[in-house]
Length: 186
Image (cartoon, rainbow, N blue to C red; front, top):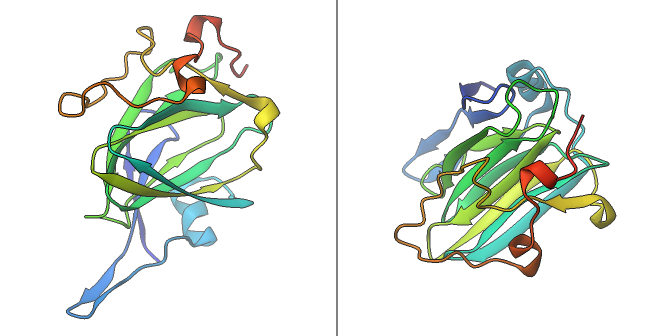
């Protein structure tokens, strides 16, 4: 399997595109191959959980992370379109507080984003709805989950909200901490 890697501006956060085989009947691609993933990212994945979420237009989720049991995430969108974001939450990193964003969607369902442990994750739905699939390197642990405010000016994520209006947020995301006050990684 050939896996193309495209840098995002945040070291370690990568856009991954596997080779697609298609013809008039449809297409086929390997959505995950451990050997190709290791060769492309330098990370030996042990994915322990697969998740599928569906969200409506304008829903914004994040910036989420787990302070213990940090999760690396391999994410892709198979229906609809999202703007997906990773934020470096490692205080010792020279890129601490920086973000990278990429559009993922059904027009390129093979396009994935690798978000290593130590990063926060967020997305906003740009289409009427979106089905979002992701593999995680550790189990969901609600007692360790944290949320940073999606609109924190210190991070300055440039959300594409012009055509969406005010984002639809959960109570948890409305109450997210500011980066300066958040519990983050060392």
